[in-house]
Length: 47
Image: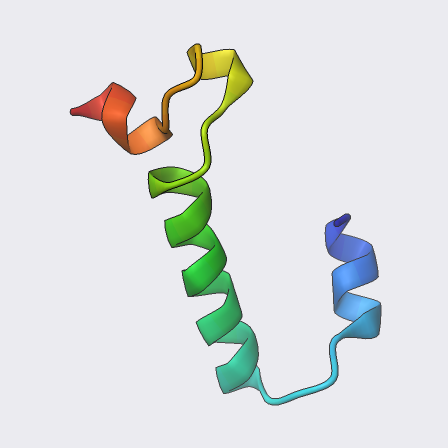
């Protein structure tokens, strides 16, 4: 999702936005496999 679209469509409090971003960051860096990292997570590459 493009960040501009996210800002225009979010309905909720700043706290809920912060929580969502923290959850997404955890998922993206520690669970989602990245093709550019040869199927690894960023966290696995850094360790």
